[in-house]
Image (cartoon, rainbow, N blue to C red; front, side, top):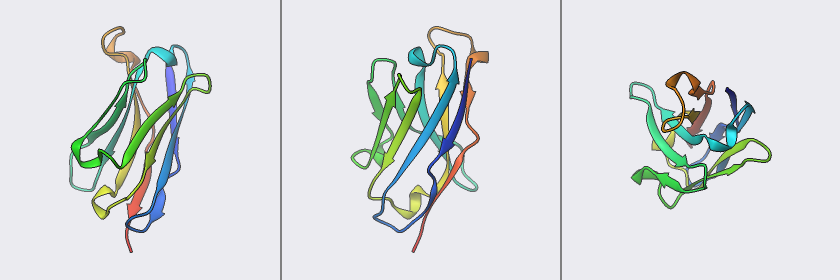
Length: 120
């Protein structure tokens, strides 16, 4: 139902900022819960931030106060503003559309990922 493409990753120094974007196409975007996940080398993919269809947000403890997830349903876009970046934030970041609670699992979607590297 939706296809996702991430952009905005890159190399940044500790303390710097990046804004990741996720562009969606297809049907029913506005009622999906949207998530950002990340996966560092040798580690499991982990959830970073969530935004509900009504705009409620949740964050993993390690990014609270530094990252902000937002959505623009008119533009079918999701964003992750990342401030005060740390080396441990280095990972591939993935956008995820989640139909849990209203639709079947086959409607879930993942983007291709965008690399974020935080280093001097």
